[in-house]
Length: 194
Ligand code: ZN
Image (cartoon, rainbow, N blue to C red; front, top):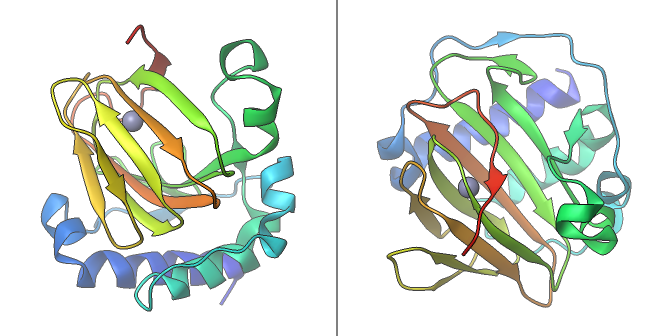
């Protein structure tokens, strides 16, 4: 099995046995592998040496992601003008499955996102509904109309369509599995005023 197929299998196992994930959206039934060229960002190159403490439940995904990291297409949605140089040096995400991912799906979009310690991911919004599920590290989430919450590995937070939200990572790197569902599945997040 390729490293990317092993990563998909690990994510699927986590998704299907975690009630919060499985009830948010069923595992997509339309996945087809797509040839995506690897693209590395600095954060992905350093993933192997990061201390990523998860739970027993998320450890398999973390291990599979470390293995697959050099073969994945890592992205950064933002520019240095929007988020700053330090943010871009320590952040990156992968669309594992979805409209433009390593595995194509029109039903659901699944990302793996990584942020370094002490980063502020400022207010942003997108049309798709979203669920953040923490794999390793800890981050504080704020969302308009909701109280702040601090997420540890195994804990989740959802955002409604177009609901502005922001995130601050604490003293460790933060790794999460993010689901997008509903209208706007093919869209991108955009920075918004708080
Ligand atoms: Zn979001």
